[in-house]
Length: 544
Image (cartoon, rainbow, N blue to C red; front, side, top):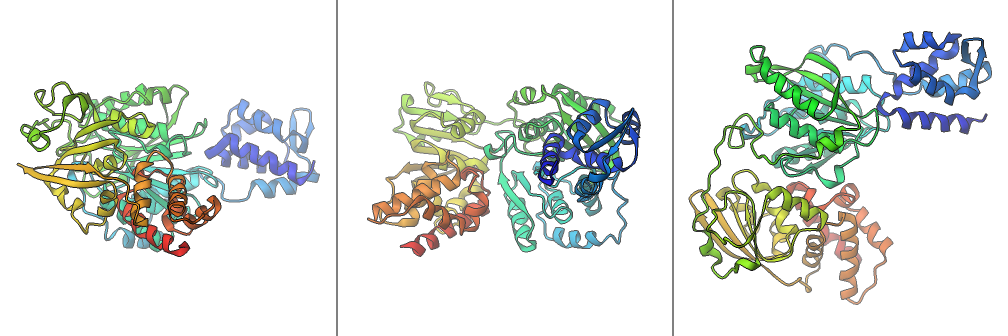
């Protein structure tokens, strides 16, 4: 057997065992001396079947005497060197002392984080907790080729992970645009391998994040509905691998075991296995109702977890405080909005969202927002003349995404009045809207704002606007593909030729294109959409 054969077996075992590959490496490196298979089970806490699987693959490099076995002397040094490369798993991360060298760096990075949003149940974990989480991941799992997702990350666990595991790609998906912009800024300053994505989990998991990750970390809202929803999205984000994990931070007050039971029942409904529950693992600045601490749940999916996770309940009230809490009342302040779109015909109108009074366009087709968002991503959204969007009070952050992906000639949107600045001329995202729509009307109604747009023809006399419009019209395509075809179309319209390879090279020179070419336009946080607008025009000038 040759060295390439050994490396092939190494890679095969790495793929089979995933995050648990460090346990295999410890097993193989221990075979320098005579062992029995039963003794290996006792020593490494691996099943008899699992050890047999490893031994069968490395059989050509083993020497046997009766029931005893070891690495053959001729191959021992090569195998031990190969399988001992990198760090081997430890039983538990060390205690975090106040003078730990990584803590000072974390304190500096966290100093300017956005203020907590009570409507999103934001309570910050201590810096020591963030480091403890990262060290637990780094010392428990083999993350050499792993991908990690932080599913919501107000705590900024991603910073500790990036500092501790600099070679591991980390993705963060969150609904808080302020937080995503802050993460992007710090990651760029420190050259951390972190990518940010926008999503509200009540509506979706970004398409490019599905079935992709080896490990998902989440510290969700602690309502039963909130924990279950975040876990459902986490399960759908996991790669189809038997050793994938979800790490869940969750706690309840010692006087409320019934609440803990409700949440743990939700975990059982999702067919998740409790591999470990580490009490008082996480500590917080606040959260005194639960003792300012929570446990870390180490969860593994079963083959029935994904089908269970795909049955998402339609609820907007998943938080414990604020306008989206379980106790919040739904209101219907939409009477009178039809005056803004008086000429709309019911048969040509689709109404999206909740709280529309029944007398408003009573014969129009009605669609819930989650179904409409899913249809936009799948390409099955219905084309219509008129589209009415009700996004108050929970989903105003989706307005820009729905404007980009909608297939309608006229759009009426109802949002909170604070959203008005997003659409002012001169606002960072205004070019992305102006390339597709003309503003017809903005009418305040109590604390709401009713905005009416009319779709315009594709701008053909201005390269950046043409390209932005192409991206908006092809929001279902991956950003890199839509961008490439848009560049080619623009140059063709100008009597010039641009090959696909030239277009790819140009896109790869931009920060957004190189980092998010495989993402979708509507997944990008607003700060990246602004950067996309800024990076499109220089690229066009470079090749014209």
